[in-house]
Image (cartoon, rainbow, N blue to C red; front, side):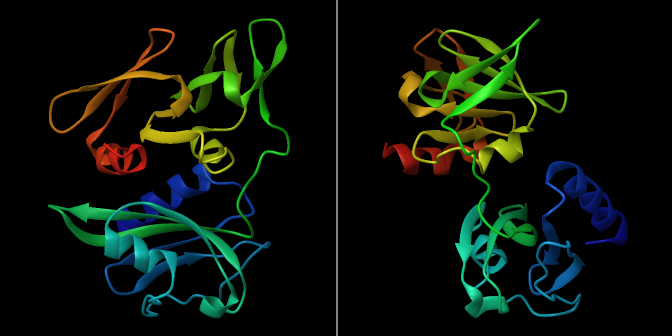
Amino acid sequence: MDSFTVSSIAKVMNELFPIEASFVISDDKRYIYYQPSKQIDLKIRPGDKIKPESVTYKALTIQRKIAEPKDSRVFGVPYFGISVPILDDGAPKGCVTAILPRKPALTMPYLTIRTTDRWLPVSFESVIYLEAQNRKTFVKSSYAEGYHKYNLTELEFSLPDDIFIRCHRSYIINIHHIAEIHPDSHSTFLLIMKDGSKVPVSQTYASHFRKLLCF
């Protein structure tokens, strides 16, 4: 992984994740870039071998995104890690990992969205899907629609994962609002939601999506 690629990824990570997050970039064997935060520091040094018990190692091994807590046995302090492997022709070439003090969580079971002239609280159960739009998150519910201040990545790890699933780089859906699942081209799917909306499942998320829904 060249220096331009690493610096580009680092800039994107700074925009995507909250200020309390540390993050690390690795190749397939070693950490090559680390940026600690004031809230959590795993004391990783560029050149260190990837620890077998870490989320980075697991993401590289199973070749898909991982988001899970780790206890202090790995780095000496507990953390919540979000790792996304970088694949090239199906082979893992590197990984990007965000490190948080704890799993982000919304304190109330609803999202407050901005409509044209007001704010509305929308319950989790009523949310049909969320869509990334120009660095904002568009929220479509059964009775209202508008924009939330968090971006899609921040919301993904704050929403309950027994209800919401990431199915595309631009979409998170509520599984209770799926009406039909249609096959699409290149091992992808098209979701028909109960309100008639159509949401794509990209190839990146298709396998994980099938496993979660058991089909």
